Image (cartoon, rainbow, N blue to C red):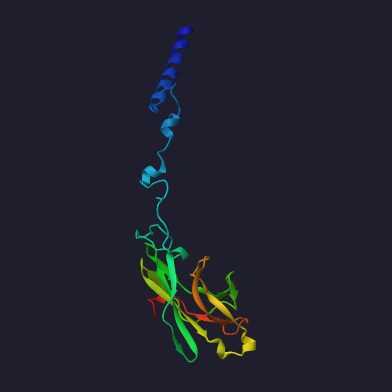
Length: 215
């Protein structure tokens, strides 16, 4: 009987051995690869791209940087970059036209765009007289100023004698308070004269900044 059992068991053991060999995996071996082998390489290795964008670039129009095209950017002129003065004026039909000159006294190139803010000032405290100068309807353009270069805006005013004295209420003024475009710090430009103190009477007009010292 024992011999019969041994003979019957032999085919079963042989079949089990053949099944294990057919799939190439030892019966007592691991059923999966080690965790370290399953870990994939970083995504950047496949593309060759850096993980983050390079720094040290600035958008066009900002100061001191490099534009996306690789060219040095030019920022606007700040109050501290400029010296203001009045040029030679001329008159026509009772109106005086005087160039307000902007000189770039910095050691860099900068730009001006649009209208300066202009108003009459008087007294030791520099208080404003009348309303700020109105803007003309002339077209604006960007003016690039190299170091030492100049640009101008034209101021148009009238003699107080053209107005009724009671309506005008003329007062002595010391000159102009001028804000360069987009700046919040002003520059005083001296000019001792008279201006109407009644709001809206004989208010001056200012043109946008243009290249050169005169039109």
